[in-house]
Each structure stands twice: as C-alpha cells, then as structure tokens.
Image (cartoon, rainbow, N blue to C red):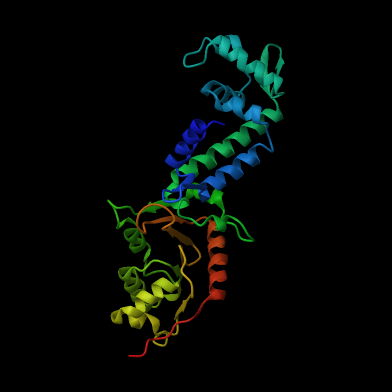
Length: 314
C-alpha cells in the first residue's frame, strides 16, 4: 500500500479509537478495541470468505436483501416495484451474486435463503455488533490494558453490549466520581474493590459504608497507597483493626485498572491513563454474569499478589 493509503486508514482507526498514537515517537499500536475488532474479523472470515464479506460491505442493498431473505422468499420482479427498494438491476445482480455464493436458490420463480446464507448473515451481524460496541466503548477500550484480553481469564468483549459507559474528560472531570457515588449503596452487603486512582472523596465515602455494616475489602495499588500515607487525615483507612468486616491490602506496583464488585450482582470496571492527556478515567458498569465472573477472578489474582497495609508510625 502507498504511504497515503496507510495514513488514511490509520487516521480512520485513530478517529474511532482502534489505534493509539505516541506523537513523540511516531509509533502506532492497536488498542484493546482494535485487537477485539481484529480478532472478531478473523473469526468472521473463518465462516465466510473475504469476497463474501466484502460483498456485504460495499453498499447497503446486499445486506438489506440478505436480511429480507432471512424473513421471507423474494421474487425480484415484484420486489423492485415496492417503494424504498433498490433498482431492478441491482436486485438481480445481488441475487445472482448470492446464488454464486450458494446462499440462495430459486424455486418456482422465488429465491429462498439457504443455510450457508443464514450463516453468512449471522457471521456478519456478530462482527457488526462487535465493531459497533468497540466504537461506542472506545473511551474505555483505549485505556484498557490489551494484555487483559489474553491469558487464562480474558476480558469478555461481548459483554460490552449491555454495559453502561461513563468517562471523564477535561470538560467533565467529575462524571466517573458521580457514577461511583451512585453505586455507593448502603444496602450493599459485600463490596470488593481494586483501586488504582487516588480519589479521597470516594475513599472516605466507601469507608463510611463500612461503618454502616457493609463487609468490605479493598486492594490499593502502590500509587494510591503512597498518597494515603502522605495524607495524615486518611491514615485511618490503613487501620483494619477497627472493624472485623473491613480489610485493606496493597500492591507493590502501580496499575491502570480498577474493579468494584457489589454483592456479586453488579460490577464497575475502570481503566485510565493509557491514552490522551491527563489521567482521565473510563468506566463500564454492568450486571452481566460473565463480566462479573471475570471481575471476581481478576480481583482474586491481584489479591494473591497483595500484602497487608500498615498504619505509618507518627
């Protein structure tokens, strides 16, 4: 490909959050969203050919007709006379292409969708949905560590479909904090958190819930622990002797991931500082069971690395 073509494609990928860029080094790399789209595309191409996929993406009529065929047989001459349909030549050309792909067959003048056509439509719509979610959730996926997509407990990308997105940016820095405050429900019986962003307001608020009887365990990363130690007014957070139902651990390294688990019924997953200026945070909130299971297993893996906190000596 020419330099101009490459630059044009990369600009498109940047604009929808599939690629990140470091201006200082002129390096480009795939975000977690870019990796998900790439993996989803390769999965789609295991079910249909590149030519077949391309035929559905060049213009609207092929996909429109394939979806119509999935609901009813079509008769091209009668279909072309209906409003909001492609021209007769486009319909015939598309039907012939589908016939060549062995997606449809003609019976008594009508064209019927075959199982290969149904499979092609399913493969395309799964890919379409995943790409749409990666674009919609780009503020989160740009910041999510791509390494979390691999390993024995990969992030369940398809769970993004029913997840709510909240993110902070220069003109709305308090959006994520506001969402976290709403999640701080006194009725929560069991709360666990992996915290990698120092936010005193939230630390104090969730500790108050412990006073109301909420069973709580937290893991703070090295950066949050350092900030708490520097703030004498927050040293009480490090003292786990006041409540039997409160525990706080710390990691010896920094992280860019946050997890909040609420009674194993809801999860908030946060990621920050992987792209853009400042440490702006993006969070997804969901009740998806698979995402909650991922969060529990991920939390437990960090718990194995964590050590107890100690109150600094005055």
